[in-house]
Length: 252
Image: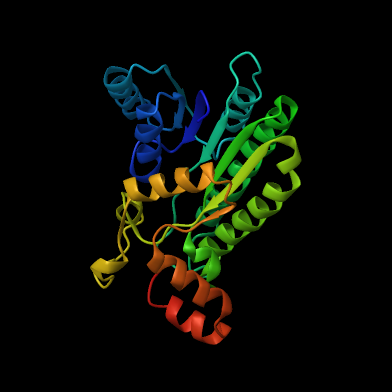
């Protein structure tokens, strides 16, 4: 595994699971999130537990200046980043067309514009060095018609799959990670009603991160954790669109 990784959105959920697992493997970290206090707390925990070097980079990735600072860090050859985990994300409780368009703009910036800019910086730096890996955290929602959020994730999956092929000869592996429902702060932050989601559909953040890293070592461009979600995603990609859309209406 690479000597240094940059993880966005590491203060909770899947991002924190990535940070902890990478630190356990001895990987130095650059942690990027809005909340400086939580970043500092996590960095101190990882330094104590695993003796790794941890930089913190407080940044709101919907802000152009902050995004540029993170991209500049990715391009720094004096302290090279070997792995980028594009994990930062959020969503809106409500369907596109009934939500505040300003909130949709912010979500577009966070879920599309930010990972695009960071991928761009990472691909240029990694291909120049001849090695590197990128994990773009998407969702199984990418395979279903479920409004703006699934459209953003579908975009990210498609760009990732293309980049994996395009930059393979440059020594860069790009993966789209597509988990299903995962127990994190994600749904609580968007104030979503998740009471009707059965227990069998829920994943743990640790198992999602572990599956992604296993698949990354195997050079897999698409990682869908657990057999049940691999089966569901296959059905979603091949079933009639009306059936998939009807099923997707049951949840955001």
